[in-house]
Image 1 (tube, one colour):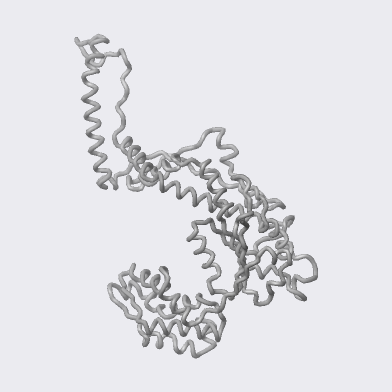
Image 2: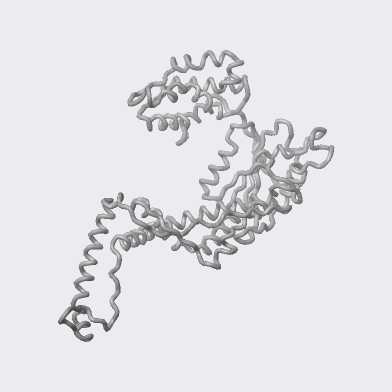
Length: 426
């Protein structure tokens, strides 16, 4: 079953990107957003369209690595604690067999007797060391040793990336000098002196990387990209050749029709070579979006139009939509501002009338000045709360502030009525 690619048509700020991003989050799918205008056709300097699949592969690899890291986190923490305990309680120096254990003037012991004495003494030493280790382990887990510094040995950072520029989109294929030459002398390690609280985290990350099977991670990442990857191509209307305008004639434009033709095989299904192996794009979902104020979907080349059978037209946000955006989402702007000010000890709350007025003003300014959708809410709330944000925490702290309809009118009514001010402030 081949995926049906989608074109989202609508003005800026109506949530085209957010729809695709939340879809990917719900499905647990690798997701990447790219700008269509950043690509050039193959053969010219710049990024070619295949780079989006390589970037998607990197995102999927990090996603799978994080999932595997969660599975080995507890084991990695235990191993890190053992390394910390080894630093706090170093092992006693080993004694060569056959050498006298006790020597001194007028006193000597044969090798056999030394061995007998050593065998009777060693269990007590080992037992004492084990008790001490368990005592330190309890202190370590309780956090009593967090401030103490230890010297740990960790892997050194890899060599800087060498960027290779070429006509076939090789500029993003960084060549790691460590991969090329680092294996000749082995991986370098360096010593760092850190508090135990930080050293545990550093060592836990290093141990987790050792426990992860990277070959398996790469295979899973390739499968995840091929089966459920989502590529969001924004501003697809900017690469459409406008009939009678720029791009319709007057010489080649390497960011328009050529890019569309390069997109064809990837959208239809082809193989893209990445540093993790060949990735087939047959089942990757492509979502294109654009405002299409000047160009029309029919201005895209016919072959590309056929690759996007589903077209969805999104309407501009109404006052009711803006009100829902302010209140319903888990990360709504009002909650973000409240959390921001709460970090400075200021408790901000909004009345229902004030929230309704903010939504009404945003809808009005969008209709009169420029329609930027939900982004208008951000500028209006910043203007509404700018004096509070400026005075915190020097002049305002440990207090509660109620934003009501009166405050909204005082801060915003004059700006809304003056259209010139609205253009520059809101």
